[in-house]
Image (cartoon, rainbow, N blue to C red; front, side):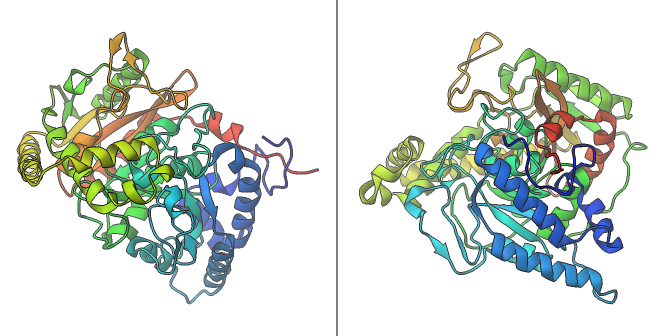
Length: 473
């Protein structure tokens, strides 16, 4: 990490890349700072820090400069309606096409894939006035809960660069946690927003399946995936979700309401690191102090993989099976295994999986007849060293694939909205608490999380100080 690089802001006066959207908006309106100045700060910081983090696969400086200049004009004109994300630096996961960029989908096969049109989601963000900082690192075709591929080095966790930021939105999370973007857009097909949020101390929101109705783009985990934000605070996620969903979520404290909370410390009886379990339990105790009714109960998670495994792998082979013959040498080991497994799936297997999927969704719709919110850990561990997924947790053997994060994919299969909110720090690494609501309960989850955010008072000064720059003398 460079000892000295040019920056407008010192450690004591934090970089505006660490500010909330609301604070940036107020500063833009008052003229205290401009979108162009903030973009220059981004460029300085990213020049200095991205080589250590590999958060970005591609910078979008030319596009961003034009967007920042346009945003500056809008703020200078008192009669102009200011879009919700005007001048806000936002990174885009490299599974979303962006006009004029290279969209790799995390694959070396698409290293030269220049895209001429925006993905629908990107078009929506562009209309909101966002400034696109770059395309963030992702595993090949978003097929891993960690972020490695054959394009570049692995994405690194800003809390400890020897550790993973999770995946598949790992580069997205790293960009926000290290102050290389105000917010990031990711996508969650099996935990790909919530896992990185938990590992990097961010707030991550997976909306209800189908709420963000965007066509085209990468086809992967299509039966389960939802795009969403990774942010430093709940309020920022609320604003971005309003843009993505074209809905308005009114802000109202729930402290005077008694929500029925289903609390499961060990979902599916999977082991959890003792310190992670302790911090999550303490967070649930704070929910009780807010007046909510906590019911410790086993959540009916079993059966999710009957739908998930078959439908994900069959789609992977259907969309990209041609790569087994065309360019197997360019694929990662995990993508090769996925395609080979997908090749063996029959039409009958798919039909049975779709039936299991329908039944699983119905099961959770009925579960929410008795509860308002489910609370559980996001992950079973904190971020682990790159390339070293845990094989034992709390003394128990776990499977390599899902052992560290067995609690997220079930809610992709059920389709419910789910979040990760940071609830504490274990040995200098953040821990996330997962909250799940009934379908289309985005507003309730946002309001509950804003109350809880205040009660938890998560302290991220460790990572802010780690990635702060001293101004040149």
